[in-house]
Image (cartoon, rainbow, N blue to C red; front, side):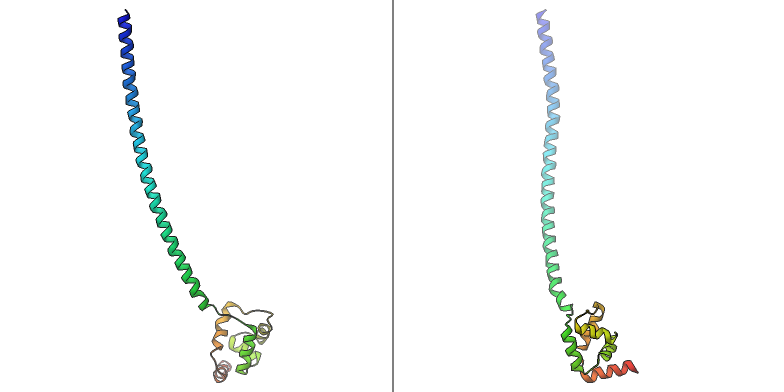
Length: 145
């Protein structure tokens, strides 16, 4: 009888080993697959980080170029400069205002530094810088007539 018990015990151990082996094989295959996936993801993350770095560098170059170009298009305003400009052209504040499309009172306030012209008025002020007395008088006569 001990022979049957020993054989049964041996058979149970063999079947148990076989089951455990099949389960561990599945786990090993899953582990290998996970490691492969992780390695692929790491490579992809690295490639994406390099791409982000290249794009960031290009964006910084674009913004640096934009900031260097931007001051050239910005028109500066000086109250003293506007007063000097008006005197150079020999215009009254009302005449200067007519050329700029504003009132004479606005011109006085700009010259006193109490207010500043709007951004939309800056190109008109800048265009007066290139005018001479005759051109300013001609433009005034065009506006009046």
